[in-house]
Image (cartoon, rainbow, N blue to C red):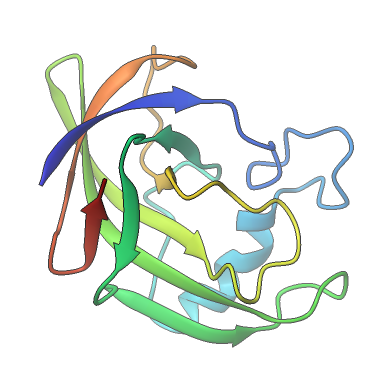
Length: 147
């Protein structure tokens, strides 16, 4: 399924941009080795997420590409579960392939996203800015959108 979404500012925690975060190196860098041990290599992607608001849609998990349980990646919070789904983003006539990164809301204690926000892991995209409108394609066998 292809839909439009708007790039929005996030918490800056995944990338380490947040000045008030207890994870100055970024949560993704801390989680990277745990995912790699489970055969998910995030090295092709920028170590930060693109927050995409897909309102009026919300998502429903069907069959994730990857699901990791009980990842103990920091001493600051209890272990978390993570989902990953395939995604493609079209920007300025170029398609970028990546993953939707989704910490499980039932195990996530901090920096929870709204039900219409997807966090995208993609290669670095020059010229992409907050509030840009982009088109994404999702695998509807993995994740379903509902209004």
